[in-house]
Amino acid sequence: IMGADAGQAQTEFRLIEQQMDRITEIVTKLLQFAKPQEYSGYTEHYAVAGVISDTLPLVQHLLKRTTIAVEREDRALQPIMMNRAELQQVLVNLIVNAIHAMPDGGQLFLRSVDSDMDGQEGVAIRITDTGAGMTPEVMQKVFDPFFTTKRRQGTGLGLAISREIVHAHGG
Image (cartoon, rainbow, N blue to C red; front, side, top):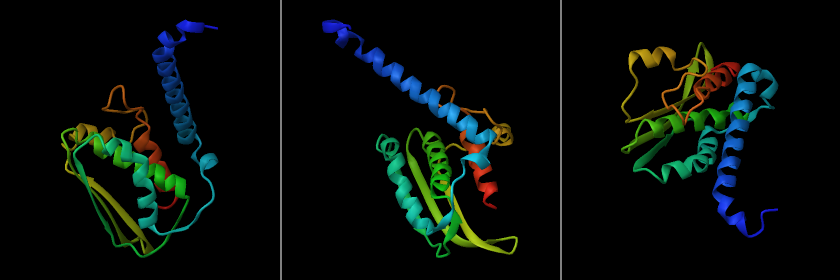
């Protein structure tokens, strides 16, 4: 029991708790990457526009700190069959990467259209930004597990996991 001195350690306790949450997130992402089939849940039909709308509040705290304008174009009418949480995870990873690519602000475009892939009806979701882009060297490594350009902010698992999720659903 710290008594009256507890207030002095409040910042340290908060930092410890944040790091524990970060460690939990890293371990969860590792497990999802190693065994994605065990972490995928049930699938249902969803309208993509609704999933995108429900995803934006998850990144709003990051967007509020920027001068990034979000532009949407929801043209997809075809429902998709996918696990909603997994699609949101992919969208969050892509949106966060776009935000990090535009530290001085810019535009984030979220577009969905009906699309066919190899004769299969589906939906294309395009997330683009006006950020600096990637060098050819980074583009070759971007899906490698643990590769990151964000140093302390990134685990290097976001795009690798996102790719696995999309492939698992035929994308």
